Image (cartoon, rainbow, N blue to C red):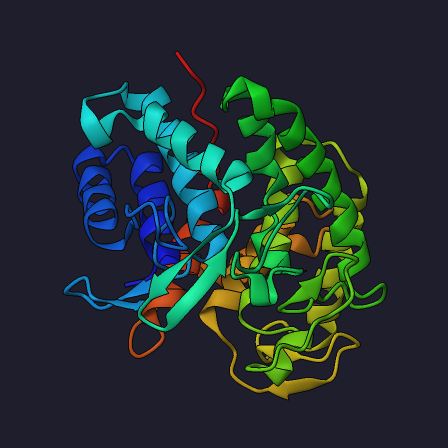
Length: 329
């Protein structure tokens, strides 16, 4: 189980008005993935990966999971109202969001030894971190940048931090321009805060367009669809779709250098799904072809069903207009 998948599942459940499923996912995440010991480096956050019996594979958080948890909880509070305990959705969202920005450094034991971790956002750059582990804290992941969500947090989150989230939304919009290739529109898997690619020690290809990278275009496209704050996001969508059209809309691979050289040949459902969502911001009529390509893809099965399937579901909701902001009543 991955925190990303749990939080995506919660978002899908709230959009589909499936409260029982939402509560079951949230209960499992809070029971098995949440780190509640004050001396734990991940205190206040969720282990990003766990076995199905709840035993963690890695106790550090993956911040995109926390971002989706927070927004899903606010949507749940607005759509269904708040209950007691962990089902007081707004209180849970407020607490998690405050920790993401404000939590102090904690040094303590983990299953991988003693570690030190901080909050999930860099205060200077106003950007989400790739990890709060201080060894790699000076980096980000372009697909974790969710300015559409930050705009909501600036309205609904704890009042003391609302100005920060407005600034974070602006910072991420600028970051998209710096991190994407000016010709292809491709973004790296990992990056520095200045937008330059980062090849991590454990993933030498992370400076290229890979699996996390697929989601980056969804993030700027949803931001445009919801807020229309930065017309450059439309240019990014047109640029990216033009690139994939040039590679064969039904045959393009799934991994590229940022300047467009393909090194992964699979035509992945997850990437097809994200390229369809890119059309939410695109101005060129070619966008319709990418939505049709998603519509004609079979439902994911087999080994990669988890990631492809989650992106397929999110994209289907986005492209059908069913993925929406749930405002307070």
